[in-house]
Image 1 (cartoon, one colour):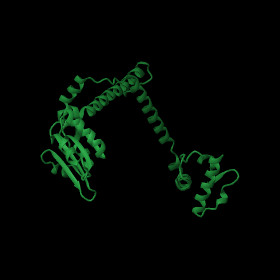
Image 2 (tube, helix red, strand yellow):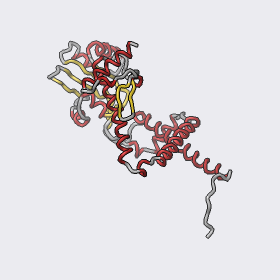
Image 3 (cartoon, rainbow, N blue to C red):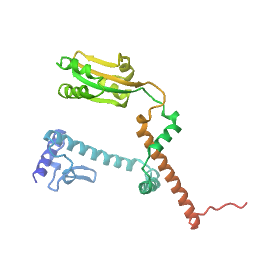
Image 4 (cartoon, rainbow, N blue to C red):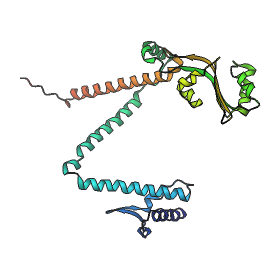
Length: 287
């Protein structure tokens, strides 16, 4: 009840704010009308998320009302302006229905039969057979990244420990970064796309790589007193992507091929079964 009262108040505020006479909120709770179409309070009752401020609620309600009105105005205008032939959408609706039913059945068929198990041997076989399609589009890197205030008392030690290979030095780095760095991540064992890393520096990847010196990429933002740095453990500029980098895309490609094969088999089976049952007949002209 409280929510309903609040919603009615919000609707009144929204409507009055747009110079719309608030008296259209009748006892039967109609809040807007377009021709013979009416929008009722009950349609708005659950539209506003819980916890929304009255100001935001008023804006949300008005947006919904305008959207509702626009939809009906377009329909009303189209009905009056289009010819009888143009308004006849039966064929399009039937084609869409057939397409939608086919898609839903194909998904059901695939879900029941798709083998999602992909072995390491199958990944490697695909990798070897499709070398040309697995060329790098951009360089890739293995890095350890930190974003730290330049005047941090731990700045020098963190920068020195970025190349740590393991052991106590790496544990110390993790501890220091946890208390001193707003952002820190370790991708020293995982390849990263250069474009992804460049976003951490707020630039493009060619500019980022131009800063690579002695295995460090360092950007100083003096206006913010901030430094973003990455230590580069490895970089590959071109050639076939390493298997570990493209493993997920290879997996997706293998699954896509299996789906296509299933659908091709489905089509052939449907045709053959229909022909065997004399449900599908091609009449050939003997002449």
